Length: 265
Image 1: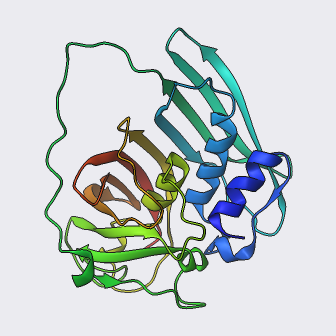
Image 2 (image 1 turned 90 degrees about the horizontal axis):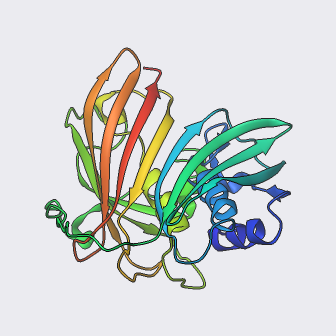
């Protein structure tokens, strides 16, 4: 099933979705997809005119592939402008992904501070793409294309604090308008920015993830390349703290991300 087909499935019947093994990431399902599907269940509970402003994610446990999973959401509070929503992915009676989201309508304000300029990045055509290689790269990379413009590939013994480049859905058919669910997959597709510091393969995964969306974001499609850059702010004792951003092809800020990752190496 493609990304678009899985979004359609959770919108039709969020209580019984089966994620196929082609969306694997090691022994579990791709976390960015799991969060995107939880988000779709959450968004269905929110009135129109309240776009998502932020999501706080905890990856409680691995999501088993080729097995039913339920995507649930409940409104914790609905204020005059902001809705607070709790979402979860549940499998075999256990929560595997927990998401708390804030959805808020725009309001008049005297404050207007523009985003900092996007980082300098080599053009897409000059960047090396991570190919999908069966049994070598994560299974989900058959659906997501990443091109490195800064920093090193995982396990390349590159000690740079920065890692990034360009990302988009691979061969997405049909071409859709880019939505927040797609952005969740684009940001989480990148490996933890601490992995290039290692010289040999070792497991690593997200423990918690917070992402903030700049609304309204530019009109883009699933064919557009978005720029991504991550910075390792601190790493020690098997944990890393990583800040990242996502920008449009023209350099408009779309999202800000922060992750705590675990590394077994």
